[in-house]
Length: 178
Image (tube, rainbow, N blue to C red; front, side, top):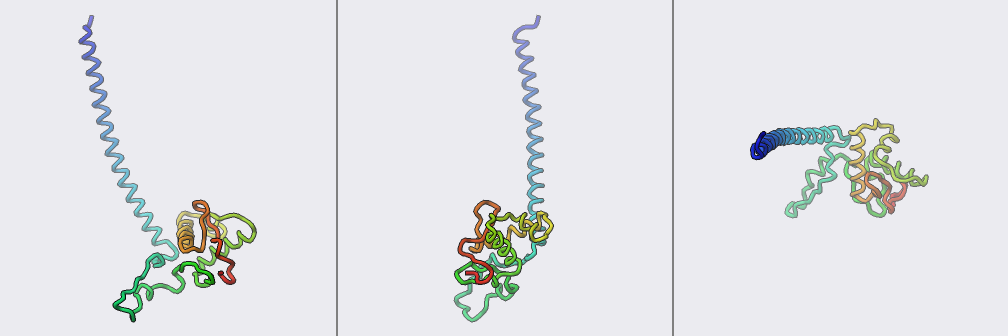
């Protein structure tokens, strides 16, 4: 008959082997997790680059603010010279017409104004893409979302719920814009 101490030693040895095996497995999983996270980050960077290239108005400098150098009052800012007409979204103010916006932005405002006029609620970017006859694919939807978010930031649209857009209260129809 085995001794109690012998049995304890056997159980201790079995437990030690199990702990060592689990540690090795945990180390392997940690290494695999780190590699997967690096791969995920690389794909996220690649997706952002592709989105930038595929965006309809790539190169839009609307998010960059040009601050003129006070020592060079007569010179025009270089970034403004490079901008296409109507590619920037100005901050909405009373009396500002929709015609200051590019056609893409006007189309978003018009769709939301029609919804408001018909007493319907806010639109998602997927619904906008479908309404505009676009393919409802992530690149198109994200391009619309970018434009809608820019319009929200500039006071043209409101986002009452995440991802749902409507005209800002003060913004009127396409006739006057005030």
